[in-house]
Length: 87
Image (tube, rainbow, N blue to C red; front, side, top):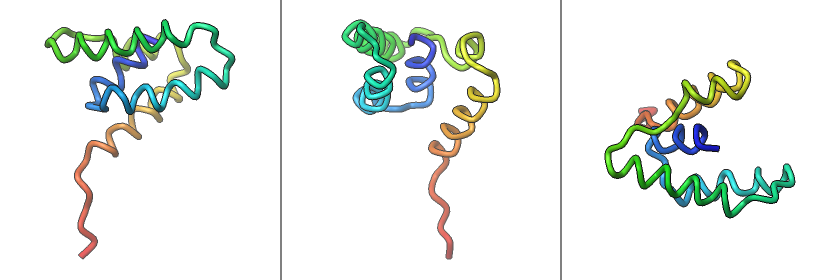
């Protein structure tokens, strides 16, 4: 959870948006520790706001298949780019 939260924090997501994204996933997999996970997300964002380094994609690659992490990274990069004017 720490690496996933850090990935979103490093990608400049908002803390509440990150929780809104991750919490339904936790519920879907039957987590019984949702408050603990949300606390981890909040602490990670606090550390990031304080200028501390937080675990991110590198650590996430140790926990999840590389292809999945690369897809997540690509999606987050796309979201950070300014919208292109089609005209």
